[in-house]
Length: 429
Ligand code: 7TS
Image (cartoon, rainbow, N blue to C red):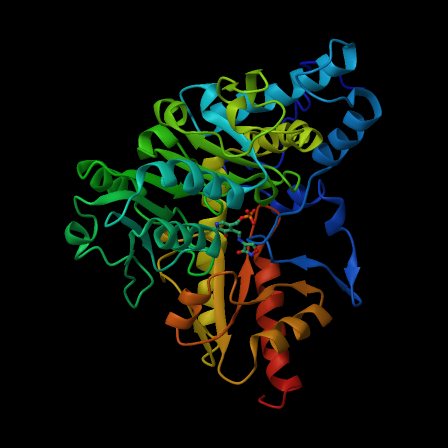
């Protein structure tokens, strides 16, 4: 039974092989959901960019939390309330250290990356972006980092300008000095694309934004789960991500913001928790981080996010990144043997993550994903919430395989065989 402040996992990491490599077969044993067959085949889960599976430690912590600690946070004086509050706040400290933020006050819990971006657009955006001002994003954004800015630009009569992409799937920075101009108030971009896999040179963009006195928001939903991230060395003013894409529960996300910016921003939602004092005619706001956390938060989810962070830390984010570079290199080479496939995004695995979108020249992505499911392989097909980008690639949808710590090269070989079997099944063999 878990108690206040108790370390929820103290896992040695036998999954780390001599030399720092990850042993995905050992990792897999910690994920109950992966021990099943789908349509008569062992499940191969390649939809990690959408959400990752959860290790036993996370599932157990959700259970022990509800069995022994459940209470609302910050309000009660009883023992359970103290335990719940301590565990909830302890995760905040872990998150701070995981992304190397300077202070715990800079870590705001949200419902996900999407809500974190909306928070910034509604508060910082509405306050600081006026008619004729400019917001800069890129052509490779997920809708979560596009629509809030499109709406802000429309409502506040600002300009929304896009950094283009070149044919290899990298940002084209040739005109960046004119794109990020003196009217630019916000630059928002993804750290890693969920379609192209491209890892952007965020440090360079934050520096350019700061030269023009703009703030920079980084969408780290696809980056924090897969590589070491240090928000201070990146120069991020805001950095967002979701727990569910990094072994944690759904319904929980993080907004990192520089304290000075968060202090000056108005609250996002209003209600309980986010106040210091309320009178019938006036209110004063709570201090950071709670000013931005109105209402009962995702308590169990935050508590159970701690063992997810421990799990990743025990494996080591450098090791995770190396494992994914190896898998991505292998996948790019195996998939490029199939001449009927178009593979999107950078060809150099050092410059990208393990989310690989592709199209077959004859089979519709939805048919492909449905066929792969008959073989026990879970992938995603569609526009991946990046419709403008997908259209820019000249298609309406793609099939996407995305990897994580429990995937191995056998999974990729099985995918390769299934992609060939699909050709035969649909009569293109
Ligand atoms: N930003 C990026 C780059 C993403 O990939 C996603 C989710 C989000 C933001 C939004 O995260 P949420 O947790 O708030 O929903 N991406 C995907 C995907 O690629 N397939 O399903 C969800």
